[in-house]
Length: 378
Image 1 (cartoon, rainbow, N blue to C red):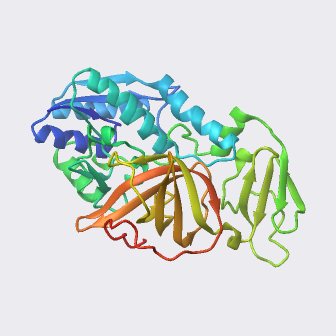
Image 2: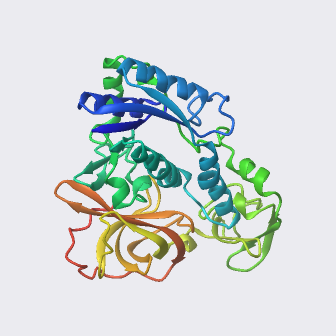
Image 3: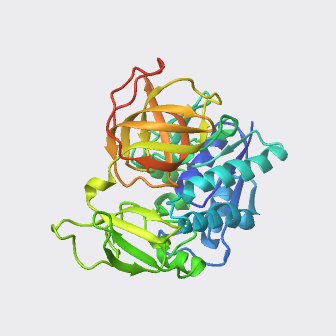
């Protein structure tokens, strides 16, 4: 099988490419140039897709003895990921750019070009498992990336490979060292790749500008402070509110709602953050089939954490998810991923982009549609 290995320059994609070669596939490596300033070097473990990373990927390809290319996707990345990220924050949402990059770049633009060039599959270093077309959590739950892959369609999954998802991260590093790959001890990248400074508020402020509004007490309606834009806030945020001290009862304040139309940011107690119902649009069902009736499942709203048992139901091109236990810090623009469990582990069954939440109370499990039992919330 002809396999295009997406090589970020890190240890995970290096071992993924190596395993594809070892499996007997005809492998070609490609590094995606996504940065608007590709000459900039990576700083520590922040960011990715720099000139340094491209060099590391090329050296790995040389060790593996496979052809290697750099493809410029900077314009597509700017439009589909960066501009989407900025627009979402301007609208008072909390987007996940890594998820959007997987959806729009690595498994859409890249995969489409790969197919056009005669490749059968794209291999990446994501920590997830793909067995007979079924997307599952990785063996290493601390590194599991199935949440940010839950946006992939059945067609996209049919031409994807995740060679490292069955192995814990420490063993991947050991394997890289044994193969003589120089990236064996390279630090993992973190934060948002196109904001290497880590200062998201400054990045957004430079692009959105000042849009003054008020920070308001959610209970009394009292104006507590003025802010320079809703893009500086996310649901559940506690620090950096610009408010002097805690509430009158001594309890800390959190961002409980964001109203971009009026520029109002409401803050209140932790209890106000509890969410029991989530509505989402752009539903994607990894099987390719829209399920009928209610589905007992586990819902996840963040890449690592924010997990609760739930009952979900498809609703047009979206879904409604009713939680059996409350979640906090759930914001519009986030993805909600749904899982079920069988004897082999957790299966990703679908996802959607959150459009609304409700604090209406808990429900009892309905028995669902006869699907596998829901996994235990972690």
